[in-house]
Image (cartoon, rainbow over all chains, first blue to last red; front, side, top):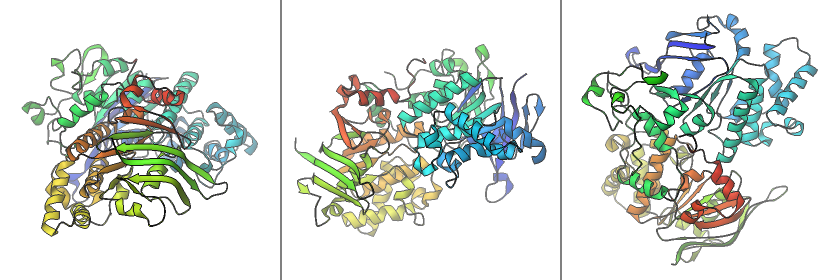
Length: 332
Length: 262
């Protein structure tokens, strides 16, 4: 049995005007996360990855679909019935400044979830647990007595991670936890999350727009484009043999640092195409407008997410034509 | 090669308690048409260096040393830095929204800069706005000119901010973390755009970033900054073959890549 399973999850946002223009931010997404698994979710801004993460945490209402936690359906629960699950399901967001109360010390913020989720715990015990969790993420007592504005972004994100861990959750949604940080600090936080995953065997959904970061941490990766999953596979499959042209594009965007980088950039500049167009053909593949491999079929008919070899899935009419993966357009 | 921008012993101090030295005796030059990148972590002083050169320091900041643009000293009395902003040195910031006026149409903002800095008349500046949006590869330029900044995506806003800087036809472009707030795919597009525009307009570029992955492809020369000082300056090709300073090496190692995963 999966730890967490989503079936046909759909989230719609109201657009101004009539209901017909409602935007399906998440459109019929199915996936499952196993016990102890850290699943990666990658896609660009606006693709619905954050909304998908929030749909698990019941922070957005579902228009359709089901969410199952340890075999039990949890999407229809009342707020009161959902409350015990708040302990199990935690989250870490992108901007740590926005997640911490500027008027509370770091230690007090980290202990705060216990006040709500473990009522009756003595203040001394809350403080003790906060200290332990802060130690686990590498924040010394002296820093814990300070206020958020006195800490760096990396230190704050460590505190936010400690706060997510303080209730011993079974699952954490990490939504772009390193994107707001300097690259050097990003590496340290990625390392910390990797260590926590190993030590706690904690299941999680790791969301990022950077495939290089996702592939560092997650064995299995899902690629999302405009509300739908377009490819899933092991990190090896996704990185070395991508089947969906959008996955290829994400890979090509990861910098390769060598002396030929300049050459590649100038080549890219020469055939610079217009900025990504925001309109998807009605009924066709949402990526068709941007896709270098699109056929008339792609604009007419939407490809479904189909099983490919060795447990992979891909939603592309032409994926069968490149079973060994799409080669990089940056090569040559 | 004579330098377009020559920075000598530039030091920036902020009056605070205790006082903060953000930039410490920095020497740096940028030649005509050259692309130079300054790489460093948050707080290393790299943005303050750009601000000091263009007279944009906060009121409690003080710059000493020398900054010459095309032979003219910008520091000292007279605020000559203000005179070179725009036509001499253009500026693109991390947050494109900060460069755009929220309540005015994109086209009006572009036309205003073009007419104020280059004396174009109403019709000429309208045509120029349209052309600038084409230069930054914004689709549906005609439509976009009539839109407000909030109607654009983050990547499109950054393209418009670049077009705004280009509207004055600067000889040198300062870009402060121009891609940091953007998705990786959009980052790659904006970098390619900047590289192409520098060529097309014969413009020099001084780019500041914390991400070496960004500059590896764009810069002719790379300068690494740590705690207010330049610790290494090298031709990009030499730098990428093997940086000399251990701090530079750690920055290079921090860039998330797919190495070892393929």
